[in-house]
Length: 370
Figure 1 (tube, rainbow, N blue to C red):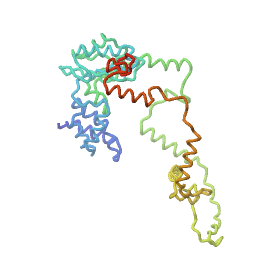
Figure 2: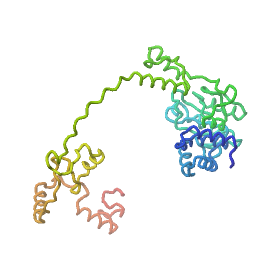
Figure 3: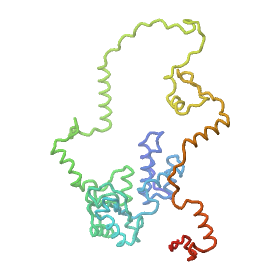
Figure 4: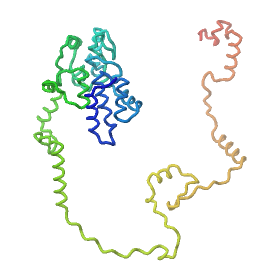
């Protein structure tokens, strides 16, 4: 597939956001970008990302198959995800999913014949306090019930765009992929709808009620642009430099200490102190000492020396003494471990008769078929 010039221009803009030697960091938004044109990440999309980033297709495919937000087959205009994890499941999430699957005639990651709806069950949508929850292209519908979920998908199939419980008005999966690639939603009033949910505000109200706040934080502080923040940081740095005290004068130089051979007459090479050795080397030598590991700089350490091997007769005497000092327990063997009983049972099994001449399968003579 040949991607549009708009997609290629956006790809160049995405790559320009990252340092030249870190361009592969642009891979995640680029995968969303190709998904915004095709509706999924196709082999052509993988090849496109590899081409513009200078990667091979295996590297791109490894990332595209890791994250569930990248779809590997054509997906409907609206991805309906129902949480079936523990909390939502207890509150009825599985029933919501089963109702939708039966009504739409599709299963997990399957799309309706009209191409409108793709259904999936999600392990967690990170909204346990609103459970059971359902998302449509990642926008939330909270506290859903089976009938409410059916109403949402039917409105979507009819061409409508129901309002999520929280967040902006719905858009198609391709439009959402553009936003996930890092571009603003250009629809009129797209971000003017929706609002926070009550459980989300509960913590703020409790903090306000009990006077809990972050020390030194003023919520009315304006958010500065990057240029303003850089100028402020430069001013603070200049102010700190100006406030530094004048450097103290350097002390007078003293004569260098005499070298060992000059002071003592010795010509032996200097040996570094133990602390001068690499910590990794010291750790390895501590954990894995052997006779071939010299440790000249560890005072008091003795090199292991192989002694003479013990004579065979000494080894046999030591083994005999150990056996004599540790007699076996006298509480008998477990039931069924006697050699005589084992031999008798084996003979009876081979002859095909039990101990009482009864059923050949009853080799124990107890009347219980084994």
